Length: 452
Image 1 (cartoon, rainbow, N blue to C red):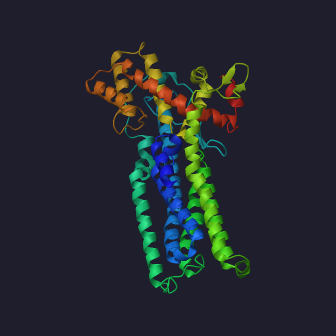
Image 2 (image 1 turned 90 degrees about the vertical axis):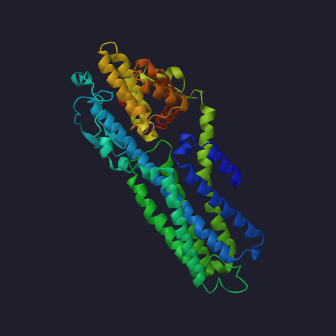
Image 3 (image 1 turned 180 degrees about the vertical axis):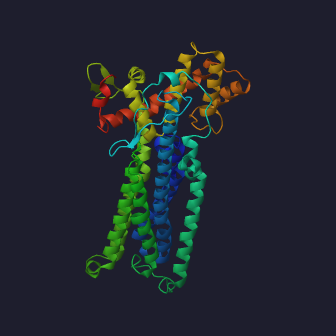
């Protein structure tokens, strides 16, 4: 079962609902939970053959791995969201109010926090400044994005960095387990004890560290992310998993340590119950739910909403391509779509779509030299290796565009394939989640309909 779940996660790791949850951390948690559940089931069948030392070692590593995986996911989510916001703020500020890449002087706009649904409201940034919008210049490298603290340290959210720290913490907890085992009189008895395994001083270090993770570190991270409303429900999922783990650990402690309860219920039985139930629930939250969501994406592709969103007399939004194309032409709705792309971590696609649409329009009224410079800016911003807003394209498309750029073939048509792929990504991934968010009532439509 563990191998099957892990193979599914790895096979579907490119799905956004899994990728943004960090596949490596998910796999670590899945392996640890399944190993712990297997040990508990084996003890239930033949308790005498599994000494308490094995339970101590397994729980002393698996529980920290679960908490560290949750912490890693929190950190990754927080970095992704902050960087996504910074990208949008950077791009929109450079536009001087017009959805294009740049303007001569970055204008200053009021930038305020909302208390509810959106963490950032970019006011005045969609107002067109006709003077600045007609001027195209090279992108300056000293920008909001480059000065953003999270963007400068974006390596923290990389898989290798997080895997390294996970290994370090596993080694630290293994060292703590070794010290506890070394100095424990009970665990070093002969024959090795196999009963009453969930109580005793040997479990104090593990419980203290897990409470530090579950009641201090993770709540602080979730508090910091209170305005980071991601489109995947990751924050809510992590908070639920932490609460389940902490409550289960607390109930286990109460059941195996209270004399009255111990007299009524065998502490090994209650310890087994309050180990298995939370672990199964955490497994569902951290592993099953993302996998289920990835399969729902496949099932929903191309299917219209059973109850389309209808507001006003002329506005109808569903999952059809016609509705998607109509949304792109509605400035107020498209603005909200762009705001949602921050929570969906796909703001790069929206910014590229706007940049290409604008240069395609201006190519008929602007000198070829200026258009060529702007085409180079688009390449450096969205396509080039280590581009600031690199879009998610196929390897063949990247290769084709980079060859054209290397050969100096700067034409508007060179980005047609990129535009088609970007629109497909938005239609297949971002747009359905955007509709689901609105169906849930997370945004208010009344402000959008007028002038849509």
